[in-house]
Amino acid sequence: MNGEATTVRPFTENDTPQPEDAYGISKWEAELALRAAAASMETVVLRPPLLYGPGVKGNFLRLMRAIERGVPLPLGSIHNRRSVLSLGNLVDAMIVCLDHPAAAGQTYLLADDENPSTPELVRAIAAALHKRARLVAFPPQLLRIAGAVTGKSAAVSRLLGSLQIDSSRIRGELGWQPRQALAEGLSQTAEWYYRKLAADNRT
Image 1 (tube, rainbow, N blue to C red):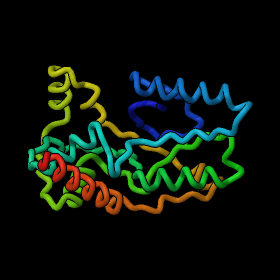
Image 2 (tube, rainbow, N blue to C red):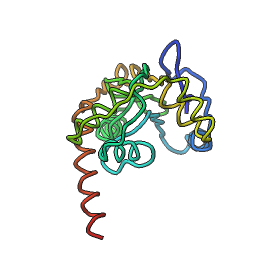
Image 3 (cartoon, one colour):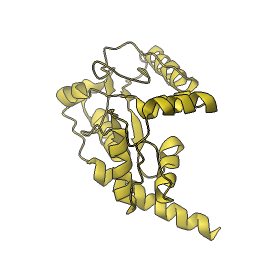
Image 4 (cartoon, rainbow, N blue to C red):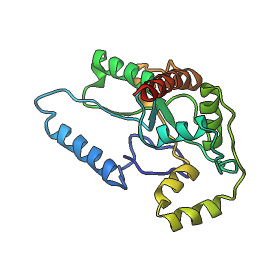
């Protein structure tokens, strides 16, 4: 929503949204539609970063599959910071917003306490899956070239770049705190993943 990367400082609610793909643009358009309807209802906008938890899909699920299958990942030389948010912490924030009178009409950015680098996230996922993280040191510039050649520049940029969220506003105004640590959220995600894998293998 706010953009695909941060450099100097984390994103805050005061930053002008700069969605860069169809998904981000659709979310921004949905926010605008909600604001237009706000005269007849109370609305609260919550902007999470990368979500993980039971039922996760997309790139996060593909990363889990690669780690579980022992695929070597050329991500060992990446030095970045990525904000993430567990599904449990998102649900907690939604409940707080429903109950707190000061939430009406506000926009809040959400994030876990941890801001892991891409290699740290891979190691944490591997630990949750009870697997060994097979990280290979590979020059980031060569990864960018490979992304350009294969038409996956955007995906590679997300892996390499930082994207940090400042969630201090909702913490200060509503008293919300992420109760679930990264390891706990990933453990629940891994349990769901293995149940899904077992169900898929039976069909």
